[in-house]
Image (cartoon, rainbow, N blue to C red; front, side, top):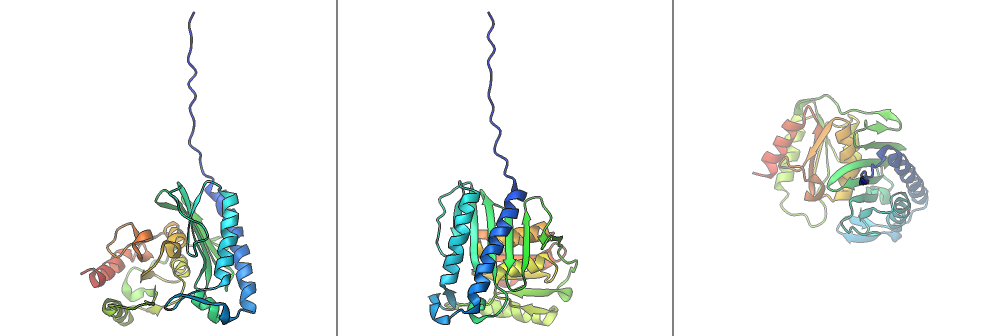
Length: 278
């Protein structure tokens, strides 16, 4: 008598990123509607100070709670990296990186832009990003392997390839400001040689604007993962690049980012590295 052995194999679970992204868009917009509604009668007396010029309000906290609750239903096995600490990161394979209100200072003063930013990491790789800029009702989104989109229409980085053609965004240092010489040097250089510098007050929006070709480049120091995760993925899928100041890939956790369209990136990153890293 002959016996045959049945070997059972298990295929790894394949994440349907497109389907998940559509649901995250809904979550971001719903949260954005809540934030916009709270802005109407917002009172500065409800603002808490986390650090010098680093604010948080009940709106940030409530918005984050709303997002986390919905994402837990969407992907129960996932972890979280959140600005306001609503949920914790325990080394899960999939982790949501959330800024419920990127641009809180703008929000509390009634000044655009401010945005909901939701990114998804698989291991150490960003695989999904949604940025909903509330004041203009603009939703930027992408997932690994997709096109970058804005309100359902494909977006691309610009084709400008030199500093002389570039409009550049940055973020100003705040908190306990030290050693600003290099920042001032970079500002002086780009003021003299580019189309100009813009400071929007929302890194997620800055990165999305580079993705849409509105800016050619963006750099900032002192950032957190939730500031850049979603916007960087959208930028990459739109044809841009992002690294830390030395051109390395760990911009997500290094606290610094250089981002630009692919035509200008090499020149831009070299300028930033020469100023900050010499």
